Image 1 (tube, helix red, strand yellow):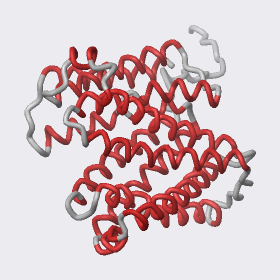
Image 2: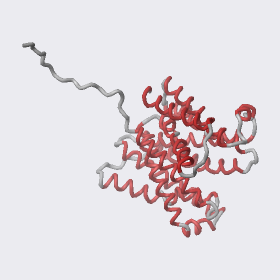
Image 3: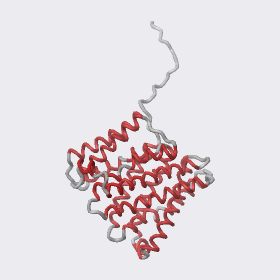
Length: 319
């Protein structure tokens, strides 16, 4: 009879653990993709400014209700706001609004396509601004994953637009549209970093209440600022926004859900990593175009999608 050594069973550690910010980011990207699709239905009913404003106007009440729920039902005490927090919220809100207007301005140029591609460099700019403003560092693997994803984004852009070629991207660096495109990316990147900075500037509190508080304050600021602009420059749009409340409400709800995801993920993790994983939104768009709209795909599109997915997996597994 052979004897067996009896010892304490030690469970094996899993190959990797999915951190909470990753599924939250994927959810945020999906809801943002849905919000963008719904927002297109407002084209023709509202001006560009009006269609952009509904994402703030109709999302703001839900953000306040969400904050009240997290505080009242969840039992999380409200954080103590400070000057730095309010400044970050204001800068983030203004940067996001500026991005919207710059993108509209970019579309007014005949050769806007190349500039639009450069507006998608926001991931790189998020990484740089995050390092400068918040001290967020990125690992070597993270840098490689972001670069790989950026190549995938460029490949998708070239495949989707006949006016964009690799040569045009290289030779158009000094054109006006390129500069505006880069400024677009900078504004979007700055808004991401400022919103993360706002949540981190709060002295205490759980992640969920800090993210909810930052989201509510930023949305109130954006609603007031852009609402004031529309009243002064496009007064008829406010009544149109209220008149078309059903499609606008759908945009507001999906935009609110996306923002909850983004703000929570930004509070948990480096904004550059969050935005890099968030590029799965482009994959969702690609899938929708194939499944629902029956659009034909090219090898370059498949290559771009493969690179984005590889970059996301590398970031998740190797960071």
